[in-house]
Figure (cartoon, rainbow, N blue to C red):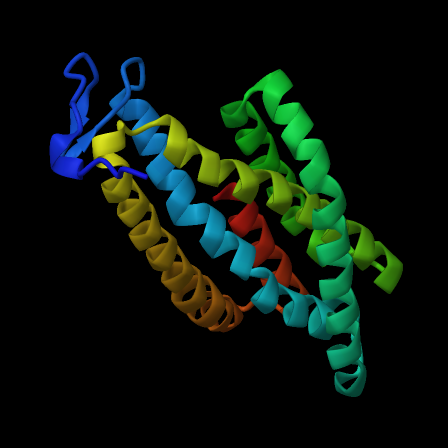
Length: 208
């Protein structure tokens, strides 16, 4: 099997160039900016559930600390099952409505899951919102990877993957430091109670 060396790959100069990245003809810088924002936010926001769940358990539902570990485990299982079921549907829908449209829909649905999460009045309701989050997560993360194949020319694919990986990492750091560590105490110091803090943070995440 012959592997083509990157230096020998042909550049299609009818496509736009962004820094060292050559884009496929028809893909604009606006498309790439949208991808960069998606790479920055999607992976970072999917990790926020690890911060948001304890906030909801402690402030909204008042779950005893001794029960939170088991409940968190069941929520993770529900998330995995939902993702497993949704992935197959995502593949079919991608061919019908397009990968970019499905990614946007998935990101919006994941945001809705976060928006509803702190308003759960019971554990079963919390599971419903977690499944909504998981469905959006499956669609958005599944389609994010395909965009890497659609936007850059072959000669720039590795650079695009590297750019996406860097933005993924920055997004995780942003969520962990700013939203996870800095925002809750700042809101508490501003006079908001625990329930209000939890809901404001989740609304902020939805708006991202």
